[in-house]
Image (cartoon, rainbow over all chains, first blue to last red; front, side):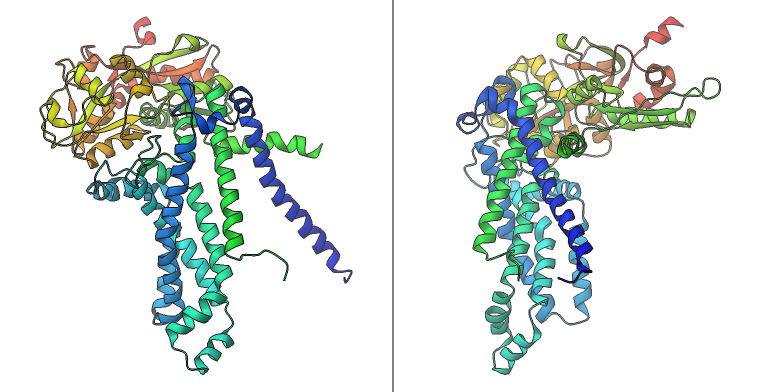
Length: 283
Length: 289
């Protein structure tokens, strides 16, 4: 290694260690804050208790874990096709005049504050969904709102993933006489697969972390969902709703729900990046 | 060694992310004469916050050196933050409990909690028993109480909210027995839910509901025990489900906090109290004069 690389190497290593430490510190903080609850209640009660009435001593987290996973997956199921289609459109089908405007519009969508999404969901989407039955504030509405919120993440990252597929590949495929749709489906998308799955991972973590908008449209009743039209409370909405006036054990139990959320995010990220072939190994 | 001093730093950072105020300073520096200067932070009831924000604006004009920061999060948060000192003054929309005797409340206004339904719901009145039965799921359809054949959407508040505590206390319901269809946080969330769902019922601060009704939001306040849910009836004490709105401090508030509280209780802000559809109260300082 040339001598001149040494300072940069040191700086990069230090900063990398720093960013990893931040995550570990947050995890450590969550564990420390939820420790009193684990000590006085044990780990199992969070999965075996029937309901969530922390003031009356019931601490079941399962309905909230279910609601968190359902709304996030629902959001990704809605947003992934739209986002990838938007990226393919920009790269292959859009008239060149339209391309910058389309990108700008999608970027604008990313800039809308989540509370605005929530309000819009509450005032416009929920009454529409109420036509299907129930109050309109349920997991379906939350999934729709989440889907819209993570759409720009998927669209923009897939756009750049597709954009980085070497031009000679598409040119070669075209020279072989493949049609544009075949080039997209059989050459470009597989080649951009890693980038797209990284986009999906980022999108799903954003969906899992989203709090305010979901809180406003999901209904927040703690019960095991029986259908998409059941109301549900996500782990983060639980914290946002109750942390403000929780004290002692109740507060500690809320940190357990934060820890649970972190575990879900961890498991999902590892699972998806394995399956999607996103490898962070050195090239 | 290094990490041990980083952890508290991160704890503070996380706390501020979670919505708590990380810092609070209430230095009063009487520079010349009685000019007040410094920073006041208030947290607590989402019912009281809009009123205090208005009062704070006026107070800042009178004392240009003072900055007042008002945040919401529920009465419980106001009490916790005041206790641990992350806020100088808490805002509460219920009487303090016995285990909160370490704090001092200063009432600045009164407010009632009223039940709301959608404006197009033909229901004109519900008895206390009917309300209890609706919230505990014994009545699930509006036709059982003389309305249309539509399922009732029960809108309830999250555990710990002051409005919820007033409601539960008035009807003597145990919270776990309530079967809600939607659980909301703030008053506005409840109002938007009822306005958007034609067959919903909820309960909110009467002041907030009246302001929204005036603004054209399609909701209607139901009378309780034959008394209309209106500000005059809260003022006269006739309306049964009402509560004090107060500022809360520890036993030894700073001079600046004291001065602000006195201003909030003075007759000078009664127009603001009324404009927020709350009911002004005669303060102790007024009575002493």
